[in-house]
Length: 286
Ligand SMILES: Cc1ncc(C[n+]2csc(CCOP(=O)(O)OP(=O)(O)O)c2C)c(N)n1
Ligand code: SF4
Image 1: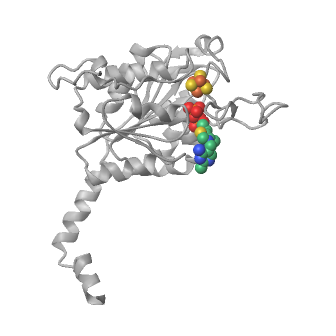
Image 2: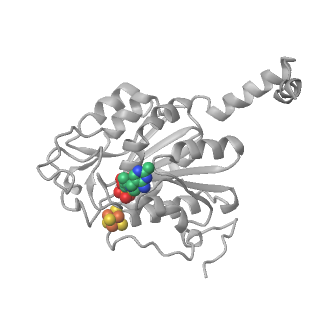
Image 3: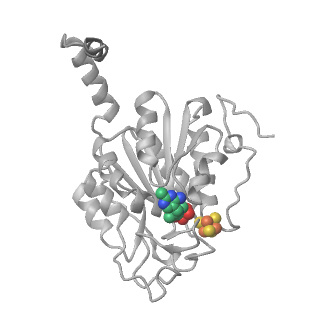
């Protein structure tokens, strides 16, 4: 049986459910999950106030492994579901998780709008540059030349650059982590959760079965420059363009009103306007 979460002194262990991940041994998603447990414990998040929303994919299984309310939703629809949850109850801690296929391919149209709205949530992409669950097809972050059943002669498409994309869409927090560095990743996720606004974390999380990058990724990992100022959007964008290196940490962070704050203002203005309420309008037609 899993243990109860002690609200005063939660441990990473106490967020584990009785469900054991069925990911392949060595899957990067284990490192992401471990980091999430640490961040939740560090922030003393009460499971009663936590909602984890996922899409479909190996990564999409994550809510089942975290003591919380969970919503294993529809492929590519993490963000609209999370938006609905947060708007219905802004006091909840909302975490979205999914793969690069889920988030950047079928779900890609939601990202610019989530970023510009700035709803207070954390969105974690477990980026393995392939479709793990469906057996290794190429994804929007697969490199040129990537060979799989769907691209037997090599991928001919330029990969997306998640960090540059999110910075240019106006996300107010953009960070990158690696599943093989769970302590640093936990620190990054903690910072994302503490950020009041839309916090995007791209986690390089190798798929050991269909695209094993455990040897190729580590030599490309680097730190952001020690003097990097995360409030400098242009500099953050410039750093994101050097895709031969993969800097880890917070590229960009800024504070601006959240979507929920804006909606609360609109509600106040509407109530003060003296305009008829929706119920009154409906009543006219009944
Ligand atoms: C509407 C819809 N289209 C396609 C699928 C098939 N499908 C399931 S998961 C998936 C992609 C999984 O890749 P990714 O999102 O990167 O997650 P991973 O499995 O790598 O964690 C696809 C295409 C689906 N379930 N629903
Ligand atoms: S197929 Fe890949 S992404 Fe899916 S569980 Fe296995 S290693 Fe992880």
